[in-house]
Length: 130
Image (tube, rainbow, N blue to C red):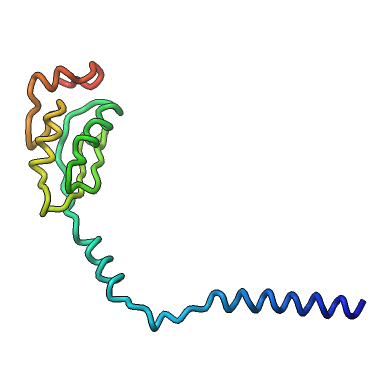
């Protein structure tokens, strides 16, 4: 019985000891220059602006957000309650005027562009706000 206890304790010690060594890593030898500059670039790469966009329902929300996601736009979120679109984009690739024109092209008036009657009339009846 004493031998069994010693074997179990020895196995237990080996398992715990190997797990603790598996977690050790020497970070002093890592090249941190790439990771820190990439993080800074991600935080400063986008510009966020908010514009008023007409709409009524969740279908409007889906259409407006889809239309706003042009090249250079990383995030677009329309608030049904506030009737505003908040867009985060790369100013080197696009601007809020281009986003507004794209939204107007699918039928939604906004403070940057007005939808044509043809585009507006193509909206589902629940989305028509005029």
